[in-house]
Structure formats: C-alpha cells, structure tokens
Image (cartoon, rainbow, N blue to C red):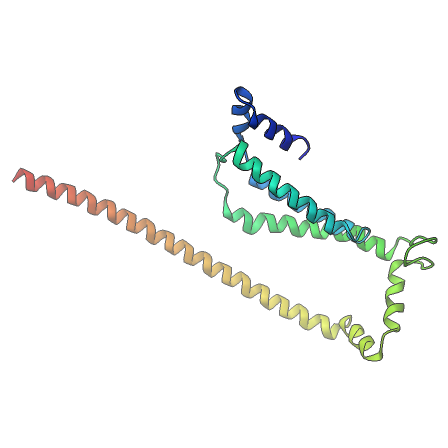
Length: 213
C-alpha cells in the first residue's frame, strides 16, 4: 500500500483541486482482495519460522481495515465498472489455492532437507526437522502410535481420497444445478419483462382506440 493511503487521506481533507482529485480515486476491490491473498500466503510461509506471525498479521489487518474504511467513505468514489460475483467464486479461490501450493514448497523443503541449527532451537542435533517427528511418535503410548501410523497407510488414504472425490463431484453437480436454475430464472424474468412491455403497448393502443371512438 505504501504512501497511497496517507496521501489519499491528506488530499481528501484538503479543499480545492487536491480534494477533488482524491475523491476521483476508485476503491478497487480486486486489488484489495489480491493484497489479502498475498498477505495470507506470506503468513503460510512464515508461520513455520515465526509462530507469532499470524498474530502480527491479524493486528495489522485490524488497523488497515479501519483505515481503509475511513478512506473508502471519505476520499474514494464508486467504481466505474461493476464487480462481477463470478470472479469471487472462481478466480480468487484459485489464486488462494495457488498461493497455498507455492507456500508449501519452501516449508516442506525446510522440513525434509535443510539441517536445523546445531546451537539453538528445538531441533538442534538432528539431521533434519522431519527426523524428530518419528522419534516423538515412538515416545507416545502404543495406541496413539498405532493410530498415527494408520493415518499414513493406504487403508486410510484410499477411502479418504474416494470420499473427497465423491464430495467434490457432488459439489460440482450442485453448483451446476444452481447455475441452470439461475439461468432459467433469468430467462423467466426477461419473458415477464417482455410480457409487461407488450401489455403496456396493448393498453396504450386500446386507450387510443377508445378515445377515437
């Protein structure tokens, strides 16, 4: 965001040309959403190395929310282009999923391949961070060990994949049915509007004939 927000606030409070220029600035919803996605991706990457990062990010966005609210109502004008709801349902979740996949790469690389510090930290003395996980599991009771090892077997992964696929197919089918229903309702609304126009024209024509008689 940089100096954009303070400059808008300063120019919006100034009279004359500066104030008019500030009020002509549009509040771009896609840019703000992409900024949130970028911040969430940074949190996903950095939370493994800095556990307090989500808390800091939450405080940051609480402050930014009220600052941007002031900016929106005091210095911004309505957007000239209508924001399409279909973009929210497809593009932004896709970008968020891509950010999650990208953020998982450095974290997994650090867990499996990068040796931890030999002088400090909870994983010192280990060849990798992952080595500490099986060792910690082996210290648990036998029931907990059997359950955790079962989660990594095919007997758990295959049914989970099948159930996830069924739920995904059901969600896609439900979304398609809702889409067809919305299209039908739009068609009916258009038909009703055409009928109203036709009836209004007929009423005008009949009133003209009655006056002529």
